Amino acid sequence: MDDPHTLFYLRDADAPAKRALMTSALALFAEHGVDSVSIRDVAANAGFTNPALFRHFAGKDALALALFDACYRHIGATIQPPAGMTFDERLRETLRRYLVAIDATPEAVLYVQDNLRRFWPLLPPDPQRLSLLGHMRRLVLEGIANGRVALDTDGTLAAGAIIGLLAQTARLIQSGEIAAPAVSSLDAIERLVARMLRG
Image (cartoon, rainbow, N blue to C red; front, side):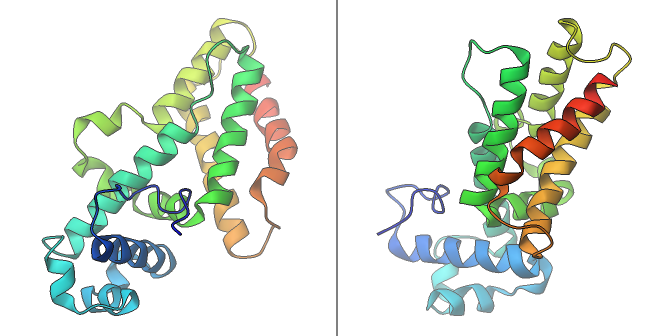
């Protein structure tokens, strides 16, 4: 049975071969990098030959971009906290949701982090509205406006620092330098972020 957390990038209507190829590609791209993986590697890892991949994607770049788009959308949607929270609650819930995403879909988080510069400019406009940096910047600016964040805080730099801290948490877990689950680091990360934002 497919795990909905790890197969979020698949649609119910996707053919079984396409599902297997995308799952194979995400695992290989996250572990080895897009440039180190061939179409043959992706197909063989999924139990297919190269022609099976070409029935669903124009090539490795098209597959890599489709995966990036799906992973980025997933993370962007995952970290959105519900409405009606105070700034402090929204900040904690956003951090918690990002850490839960690391635990549930580590390959997706690492793949997005490693390929942001490469694939972000190629995305269609609508996923960019779910910008991780933009979401975090809006949250920081909200905190400045209501006095919960120091007035002299640069919203963009602070947002980048928070996203970087979360992304590096995923990398540290992958390398074994800190223990999983990521969500167990929530209190420590929240304290670091609060110190940074409140000066």
